[in-house]
Length: 323
Ligand code: ADP
Ligand code: MG
Image 1 (cartoon, protein in one colour):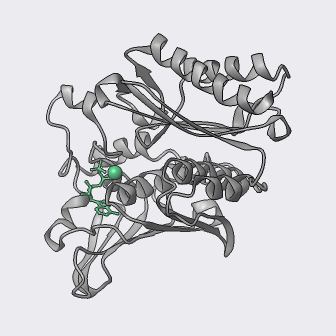
Image 2: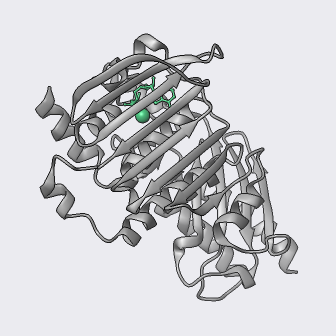
């Protein structure tokens, strides 16, 4: 079991950003409206994620760290119906196999909860404690017991860059949640929640979005599209400012990206890339979330129709502005 967890950890926990991703996804799944992330030294010293979500029942706090104890997958078919972000039940066991983890959680408003500490897969503590509703997980000294892996970590700035990306994606995918990210005491992201996507975009890209970002909104029987696309003065030299979300999940899909660029470039023929945040909602049966969700890739069952709809919708939104 120990060995299995360390092997799984190699797949799930590649670097500090993978820990942040898994913990923040859990907080999102728990229905949190506020998620705070604190990191030190690029996440290698400390990662702390605090949420005000549902919390974990006292009797489940320890078992959450055991492999597949909580896996929500019942059959292969379920992979096509995934709505929640987590479904493998591997993150907490994997993280606690290669770090010193302390979880404090309460599932009600009695002021009481549970604290569970696990270091390198070994249980150190499981006690009752004072706790507000929600979950607070601290991950210290990542890879302290796997020196070979630790050696592969890049500079603090590089690791921090990956963590910021994870947080930006979550904030864009969930404007209804207030996210904050602090590194060594410096604030790197502060979104307000309440569904204000424009504020999230402003906070991430450090721009004044009161002008220049055009709202997108379109719908047909299968798809609902929403988001913002920037006018020419908001363009960028690479695709880093193009974000696509499907059913609340940040994804990458080349066909979709090309559809956006086709619409953008026929109307604004410049060899630059737009700042665009595009959210798609569709029935889960229309999207195949890859067996490896960490890779962010998805396949659409009606790809041609979807891409055509995205292109047409963006064209009409843009042409109103440009003309
Ligand atoms: P998965 O998310 O794939 O189910 P994880 O190892 O990430 O597996 O988490 C195990 C379980 O612990 C989750 O299914 C959930 O029930 C519980 N859990 C973890 N983090 C939180 C959280 N922040 N709030 C509420 N429950 C949580
Ligand atoms: Mg999870």
